[in-house]
Length: 191
Image (cartoon, rainbow, N blue to C red; front, side):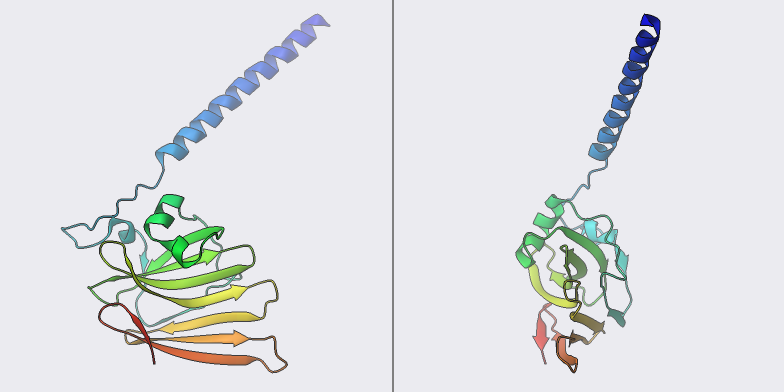
């Protein structure tokens, strides 16, 4: 019987040792794969390195980001959220996702970010200067699942952005449409 206990004890010891090694390997991988964020413009290409890696969409297109069509993988680390000033737009949210970019001007970068909490999801187009200052921002999509009564969908072209806001709380659903022009400095101007 002592022999059986000894073998069981040694097996448990051996298995926990192997498991600890796997945990250490995973931790090393995570630490080695941290996003390296350098808030500088690449002088050769005139691009911001972080923005090179994201998808570029061609205009025109419609953004209807919502809980049904967006899975929300790979949230940005706190360092990137801070450097892109996303906490200033919607502080204390659960996750921030760098989605895509689209070409509006060579004077600024137009980046689309989705910000999510448990019950709400907002998608913004944010125009950045080359030194990572927010020039302007505009909410282009919105969804909430608490009442499933409000949403925003936008159509984006080279000349303007048309935002349709829907309210299903009333007996007769209400739709409001807002038109925005984009000036050469990157500001959104209500028409």
